[in-house]
Structure formats: C-alpha cells, structure tokens
Image (cartoon, rainbow, N blue to C red; front, side, top):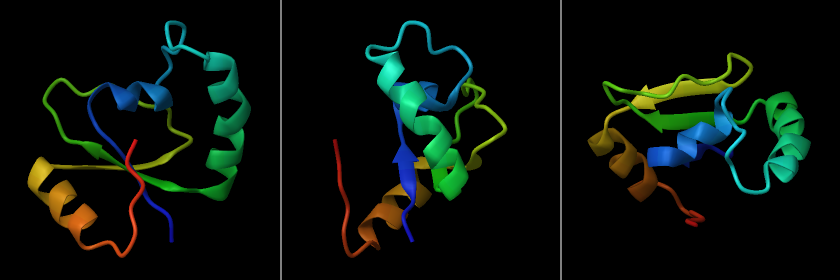
Length: 79
C-alpha cells in the first residue's frame, strides 16, 4: 500500500488555501484522483498545524513516529 508523508509546508497541498502554490493547476488536476484512490497521508503533528480538507485520509504523527515509519519501508521516494 502507498502512504504519502508530507512534512513542513508540503501539508499546504491538502489545504483549502492553495492560491499561492506554484503550478496549482496541476495539483488541482490530480487531487480528485488521489482522493478517489483513498491514499493515506501522514502529516507532522504540530501545535500550529495547517488544517486540511476533509476529503483526504489523514493522520498526524510526531517526528519520531514518522522517522520510524520511513525507516521501516522497503522502498521510499523522497523529493
């Protein structure tokens, strides 16, 4: 199963405020497919977290848990 980990400002990709994102047209093109595929997202659990749209399967985890999760994977893409 594919799981996407978004760190830092990358969380904004799932938020309501996408006006200042570069190439937002491309993002808007693919978000419905990502939603339909029910791809789970793991986001950093921060006190000042960015709210995300309800359409996505999201769980918030601390940095240590995210680190352990990534280390446990057989394959990871990082960009």
